[in-house]
Length: 284
Image 1 (spheres, rainbow, N blue to C red):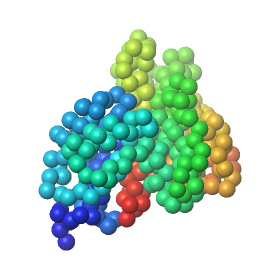
Image 2 (tube, one colour):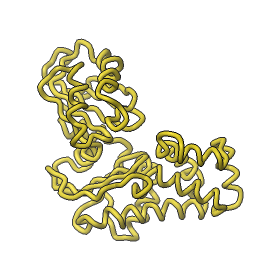
Image 3 (spheres, rainbow, N blue to C red):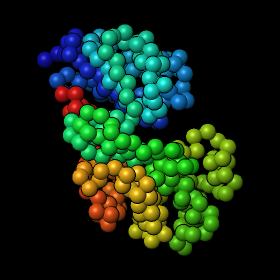
Image 4 (cartoon, one colour):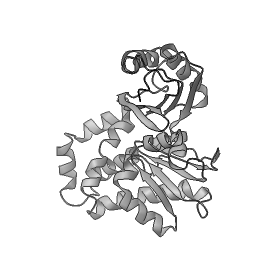
C-alpha cells in the first residue's frame, strides 16, 4: 500500500548535538528513514533551524502528507519550544507539531506507558522517574563541569586528566596522545578555549572501551557509573522501578554498567543505543 498521500503519516525526529534521525511512520510501519545534521535550539537561531529543515529534511519528504510531527531534541527546554515549533512550521504548516526534550524521548521510548526510570548516557547524561504519563521527578544533570556523571564527556575529562597527571597504566598516556594527535597544550585549548568541549571529550570514549580490561581505565568507567547511580538514580524510587538506558555510552559499556548496578542492588531494564525503535512503537 502506498502511504505517500495518506493522512495518517506520523513524522518522528530525534535530534542530538551531531545528528537528527527522522522517521516517517504509518500505523507503526516505517515509510521512510533518513538523517540530517543535529538541531540544537541552544546553539542555533530559529532562522538557522528553519533553514536546516527546509534544505535537508523537507525535500526528502516532498509529496508525502504528514499528519503530525513529534520532535525530540537536546536543548528543547520549555522556553525554546516555541521557536523550534515555528521553525518546523515554516516547512510543515500543520496543526500537530509537538516538541519534547531528549529526556522525554528516553521516557517514551524506554518506558512507554509503564512506570520506570529513564536515563540517557551519551555525550551528556540525564535521568528521570516516569509514572507512565509524566515525569514525576528529575535530578538536574548540570552539564559536564558540575554533573553529567557517566557521560562520554565526563569519561573523556577523567581520561585526559588521569593521562596528564600520569595516573594511567604504563604506556597508555603515550598511546592516547598519539592516537588522537594530542599534547597538553592542544588539550587545554580544546577544553578551555574552543567551542563544544564536551563533544571533544566524548570523542575519547572509544579509547576507554578499547582498553576496558586495563585496571586504570576500568576504574575511571566504574567510578563514573557509580557516581551516576548515587547522585541521580538513587534519588528516585529505584527499589520499585527498573532503570532503563538509552545512548552510546550505556550501549557500549553495558557490561560495566550492569556490574556496577548489581553491586548497588539496582535492577536494570532496557539498554538501547537509540530511542528511535521505541518511539516508533510508542506511536503505533
